[in-house]
Amino acid sequence: MDKLLIAGGTRLDGEIVISGAKNAALPILAATLLADEPVLIGNLPHLRDITTTVGLLRRMGVAVTMHEPMRLEIDPTTIDDLVAPYDLVRTMRASILVLGPLLGRHGSADVSLPGGCAIGARPVDLHIQGMRAMGADIDLTDGYIRARASRLHGARIVLDKVTVTGTENLLMAAVLADGVTTIENAAREPEVVDLANFLNSLGARIRGAGTSRIEIEGVERLHGGEYDVMPDRIEAGTYLAAAAATRGRVRAKRVSPGDLDAVLAKFAEAGAHIDTGDDWIEVDMRTRRPQAVRITTAPFPGFPTDMQAQFVAINAVAEGVGVITETIFENRFQHVLEMQRMGARIRLEGNTAVSEGVEQLQAAPVMATDLRASASLVLAALVADGDTMVDRIYHIDRGYECIEEKLAQLGASIRRIPG
Image (cartoon, rainbow, N blue to C red):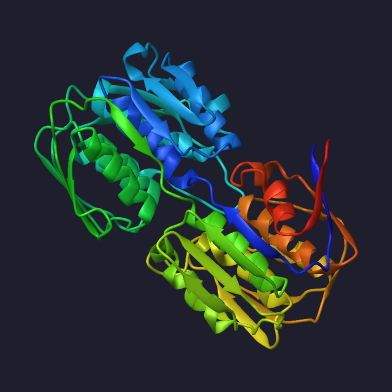
């Protein structure tokens, strides 16, 4: 099992290019199942979750051809199996996203229930309720969601809570349905907008993506096309957080600054100088120690839960007392225990982490528990005195493309130790 060895104490400085967004690429890859012609998807990040999704498509008989690094041609017309088996779904919960496209295009889907998750429960009942409202017959048997429908019909679906994957799954199911489907209390994340833009480029009729009310007018078919995935706002935010934590300067290129407004506001509150262009963001802490910040996570356009752990790392070495409250997932502070091993003064009070910043952390062997927790431990290692070994980094490889190479470009002393 690979590890990362990081020598702390270096002020990061430089520029990096941000990869395509994993959280947009996964639903877009699933959505290719709705087309009746080949689709070319570009700007895909080279990540384990992308590889897993491609493997799932191929398992179902879909022809996938690589044209150049991470630019894939997907021909869904060759599909011959409408099952997403447990051995693949258990490794990546986003596999549930094939449910809507399979049901909407083929009228049948057998998708394994995802099982447990390290950061808390992510129930799929809202997906199922929405598809039943559209006329699907769904049974939960033998650990599988078994869904059938001759053709889905339009419906008004009011989500009890904001759910990104639920919104995406229902949106995809509705694209080929008979009539108009309205999703109320829909997720507003940029990745949902990217999915809708992709589907519209193939002939779908989706309005309102990016608002809490999405309207989908069903069409008879989707044709082929080409599409480039949006940049990864969480990857960008993570490297900018590394600049803030190390009192350095990082310019993230090929990004959409408007997608990070809530995060940039907290960098400014921490004392960083922020500069932006059409497709770049620069965070410059100008060698100053960051100031502790107060954060409450919320659905977009609020502060993203996927940036919470990175700001816990910043608060750990900031001046003052920082307070971060997690409202999205109930078990997303596992990184705190590892940071405490590095000398961080953080106490947990329910779903809130209260940090009393220290001048510098101390190196210690740490273990990653989930994707964003892994990133936060890398940030903590960058500001620690000594050499830190971060174990179980397969979590990082799920969401960060070549993280050691990109950090090295910024001046970090980091190397991968093969397991």
